[in-house]
Image 1: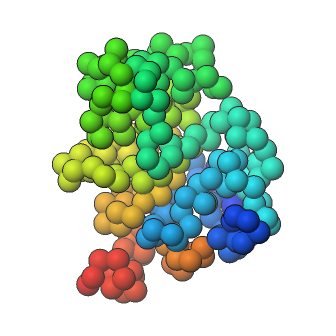
Image 2: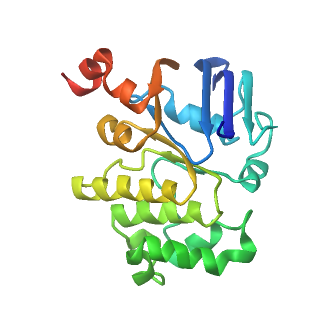
Length: 237
């Protein structure tokens, strides 16, 4: 049986005393891609923030590699190898590409900074070409590459990707999902949180569909993809 890296159980979380998430249960196994699918306001980003230690849950538990982390600091969670690439890229625009990447290993894998930078440049040759360029001058697609590359600098055991295809052209979206598959093939588990249902299910092993803070559908990617309710709601079929 595969190792469960991330286990979320009975999770409630929100803002100002009001819960956005309502009793979520979720697991991610070693070397697995798990997709969390849903529209704007469904609770996807709240889930990511709670898992990564930015937001404290009101109830429930989160464990990573069998260690409880629901009350842990974000820095501790990063040091354990759970890395969150947030929605909107959140790069440092007045720093160079190289400087942005190097910040990714500040808490973890600092001694292997040069080797990991080389790995990122191999995955993203365009970043290598722009290593000395200010990050704020990159295109949207290049900035997304940089955000993911910065996450990879920390040698993640689990990489949370929050809307990685948002705002990208169709060609770049295709490239982004191919890259996610490559990262996973190299042994990194991925929690893919997306609105792009079709391409997320094409690369994921399992999926959860979230609506109004609750999971309304879950199972293998094939099972979720063939569900009539999902096909009507998200695919218009």
